[in-house]
Amino acid sequence: MFELKSQIDGNVCTLFLGGRIDSTNAAMAEAEILSVVEGFEGELVLDATELQYISSAGLRVILRLKKAHKTMKIINASSDVYEIFDMTGFTEMMEISKAYRKISVEGCEVIGEGSNGKVYRTDPDTIVKVYKLPDSLEEIHNERELARKAFIMGIPTAIPYDVVQVGDLYGSVFELLNAKSFSQLINEGEDVEELARQSVEILKTIHSTELKDGELPSKRQETIGWAEYVMPSLPEEIGSKLLRLFEEIPETNTMLHGDYHIKNIMRQGDENLLIDMDTLSVGHPIFELGQMYLAYQGFSELDHEVIKHFLGIDRDTATRFWMSSLKYYFEGKDDAFIGDIVKKSSIISYTRLLRRTLKREPDNQDVIDNCKKQLCRLVPEMDSLSF
Image 1: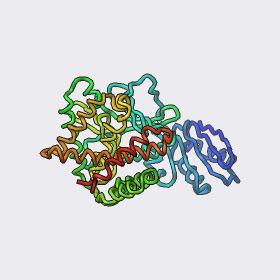
Image 2: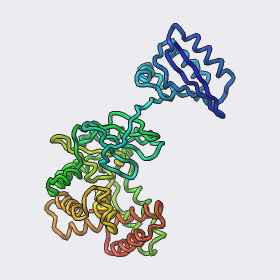
Image 3: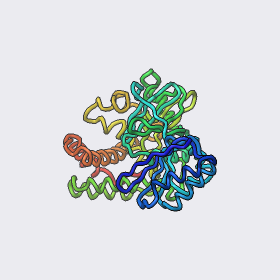
Image 4: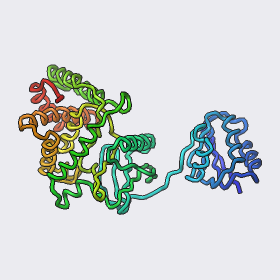
């Protein structure tokens, strides 16, 4: 049985398709549809939420509609119906979107949170990253493609296998059987030094991966934008030198994770895996170290309680993890070299934090003043930010 309901809202006509469209009722279904849309010249949307099945006869009806309404699209197709459209090539002819499985994360453990999403454990086998903005589907699909790219290149990556709807938001589902973040492992008493060594193993794998021009966004270009944004808020000589330091960092095609910290590294069995791959980019490794400084030091510099909320560990432990990471990353280098790397990383960190605060929290004067003070102290000491 075929069912049809319609709704016209301004220039958009939505047809709600229900039941089945097959050889026994395709002609009748087409006649019903045409009785609604004949003469309509606006946007036509077919909502397939309740459509259970469509045969080749039904597909021919859809094809004729598409020819008459060039911008027509189909939304909320079930997995089975979407597969029919996909196998027959209809997904290449027109915009067709799936209906997403709905889940609740109420009462679920929060195991991580970043600027664009929050990660929940929904059961021992599964975690879900819920994006904070309702129009995030494009971002979710982009992250899935980035994760696949990294996995193919040998990066130990957890690949999302499903997209779900969580209230008005959307999320990516990962199968991580009994996995625990490095943050959890630290709180369970595992050795901070050893976990830092393991994290650097993955970091070096990422930084040994070279991509082709244009495969991923340039972190250098992004950070030059940070420096340009904060320049007016700094003394002229500091701002101009800061911009020059960023501009002189060489452009490279080295893969960067972009948000590398202990809540984005998961241990599953004997394997360590990365999550949160939407920040992948290319650039000099100093940009990665600058982000790590911000995670382990910069965000919590004025309020040491911040890091407990962000990473789930105390400030002293974060400092130990950060310095141990540098020791293993730059194995064999002396304390003076490491100290210089800390200064370079912190300049990148304070620039990013200042830009972020000026844009998002312009009334947070304490953070703004501290970033300015630190940049005014550090920038005159540096002739280069690269190594």
